[in-house]
Length: 437
RNA sequence: GCGAUAUUGGCGAAGUGGUUAACGCACCGGAUUGUGGCUCCGGCACGCGUGGGUUCGAUUCCCACAUGUCGCCCCA
Image (tube, rainbow, N blue to C red; front, side, top):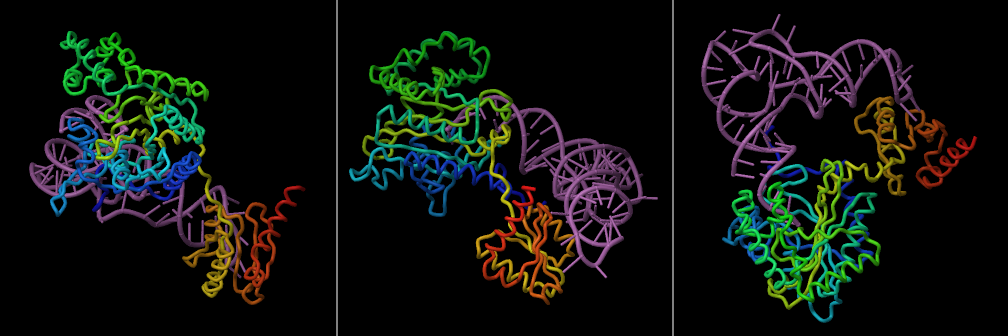
């Protein structure tokens, strides 16, 4: 094999692309009903856009970014996530202007890049669907965003989804809590796993969701963020819960849920699935949260924001494991069987004529025998086969066969050219009558 | 970045240090001068991921690399 795709990339070939299109179309439809409109930002940004917003010490910045110097010596990064770029665009295009309705609601669909070891559902180039809404601090928007995410996933017939929510509070709440957590953990330092010892220094909150059994025991009695919320943060979170109740959306509060990125505050949420795709364990397929302050970090005015992102590859894994309804094969209306090279021109004209009339039509291009052509027609699930040979050319007619009922009728060539729809409808009528008998 | 494991035709999958690398599916052709299924017959690996090495000889043994998969780290 001379050439192969770069590590961690995937080709999405026709059979797959149909599923992708279905997922993307569904997203567009749902989001549009919530008045979200698409934004397309560059696949690469200046390094600082991400380093500034994600936290300089976060793993994503230190080891997972796909970055390089371009020929003009600019430090460029292939976007590892969608939010930072959208916020940059929001600020750069002054979408916070007074003439623009708030909240400004937008969504994106596209590839993201992460320099990491590939695993199933985790590639170096992967794809995300995400939404962002700016300019409104009202918890109603938090809930609407969650509802939209659930709506979207439900469209695929996914059941057993779990909505987990938490709050990180505002900066003060978070700082206070961090101090309390560290104070609690310090006495246990020697008992913590090596990973968690490092986390204690770098990002203490992450100790909370350690997979290590011993860590989990220690964490069990750790103080909860929920006890360190400022009055405003508490109120915000209470309202979120109240509104979720009002919509009868069930949820679980998980006070140990954290985020890998620094820019989140207040409400954070994850939608999890216990699909077979993940061995039956609940795994996050959609994650989001509020990021008040992020717009300022990128040089814009003080503007609240909230959004979520989900990985298309992971979603597809779940859909396939759950046998979710994916689009059906597109049927072929007509397959034209041409017998003998002398029918080639007429076949081409027929095919084009019917396509222009709005039908999906295929033919043989290999000058194969009728048998082979019928086999193809059958395999392509053709509804009708139009057969054209020497004798038909002479009489200016052709044989029109219904592949479902095997009924055959003779049709005038001229009728096909002038009004194929009528020919098709007549043939369909026969099929219905045959069914009725 | 760390660890484990895998890599044989379009796909799935046997197999051996030494003549022609099973089998199944798919595909193509024929039996059936112009009709879809079934059956039967026939065809279908620049040779076993790439590069080295050991050997009289390697697809089979060793090493390196690449890629896949799984776990760790991390997870938007």
